[in-house]
Image (cartoon, rainbow, N blue to C red):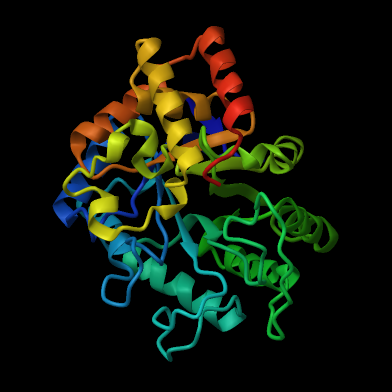
Length: 350
């Protein structure tokens, strides 16, 4: 498994990262432990979680994912073998993340509370990469890289990026977190974090976790240049478009136990243009003799701005197939055909 540098740090992370948002909902503790065992055995040293998880978020399950990782770390003694990442929620009206029922905001007390609880859940004394899951400010769209702009008014209680970074800097000094990342951020937001770090001598962000896939390459519009020039590499999520790029939902199929069957949350991928694009990419993979999942993951890993591609699976056979993509190098012919399809379909599922 290829190892890549995390930002400008001396930390090396695997080109594939194990996503864990199904642990505690679609996957049991035993299944989550088995996935982490297998991933580590195959060279993945990077696990990504969030205080929000598992997905879909709700009051009853919140925090289970971190706790499952924590019991695995305690049981195996593998803490020094893995880079553990988690996240704090941004602005939200979900009121179950804090003990007093406050809405989620990036205030000092809330950040400190969230870090301490994640440390307890994870059964560790430090978090390697602590990420802002989405901004405290109101934005034009979730993911902060929309294909069209819509005006939003700033909230009266908006917490600035500078103030957020100051709190995180104190937590780095305290040894509770080692490095800082952002998620679902825009190029403006990323550069504000970088500017604040340079202006005030605060820790620099090392990564940005945004959506990126064959059907959503909006990251390339502006953020790719930030990632390359500022060494803030992408940690890509939804590289398989939540399963649509595997072909499992083709022709209206609804596999039992799939996320769509269980939760019916995937409407962003059901635009007719997106369905046409999924078919085209799956057909291309099959014509090239490739597994569609592996082609999609290999493409994402091949990008120069990519640090690590986050993959998630509910079954071990899915995980085995996905991790095997690390050995796949796409031919120039396939890459050219992918770009031709992108020229035709654009970003139908941002």
